[in-house]
Amino acid sequence: MRILITGGPTHEYLDPVRCLTNPSTGRMGMELARAAAQRGHETVLVTGPTAFPDPKGVRVIRVVSALDMDRSVRREFPRCDAMIGSAAVSDYRPETAARSKIKKGPATMTLRLVKNPDVLGGCGARKKGQVLVGFALETDCGLENAADKMRRKRLDLIVLNSPESFGADRIGPTFLTPDGKREALPKMTKAQLSRRIVRFIERLR
Image (cartoon, rainbow, N blue to C red):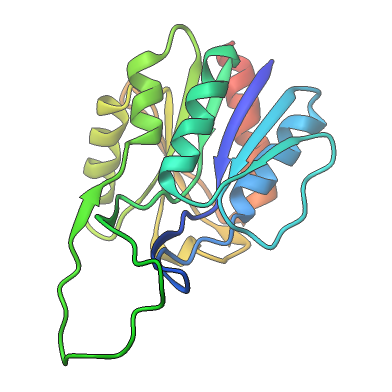
């Protein structure tokens, strides 16, 4: 199969030195890409900023912002058999970015934000037989919110995590599928979880 994977955070710059982002390290995306390549699949990884080196046998497209990631995914998605969206994409970006560093000034300032494109949701709207896997990181009503996200984005599997998964090597996720099944998994490494997700995709295909 040809598998497309997204990973890492996105950086939405306010000025040349400051950005809106999150604590994602990109490890999950790297492990997913490595697992897919090791199973013999043609693998493309679109990743936001991360310190990890490119996995062996994987074509890596490095991006910065959500708009960058969306453009790359739109280009690659029609030619893939499956996609795994593990990237922690910023929901919003500054409406404008300053060309120079914003200097310290008043005690308060207002930042106007605009919504970013829904990278994974866009793939769900355009999918034609592809297997789609997504991730949900929730702080409240996790199962309900993950199930809702799965339906809205037309996913075949969603992996529910908690904020503790940021930067962690071992996590205890929950699998949800459209048939209503919910499987709470024991703690495992992200490498082990990646292999499990790839095998899930193989069974569906």
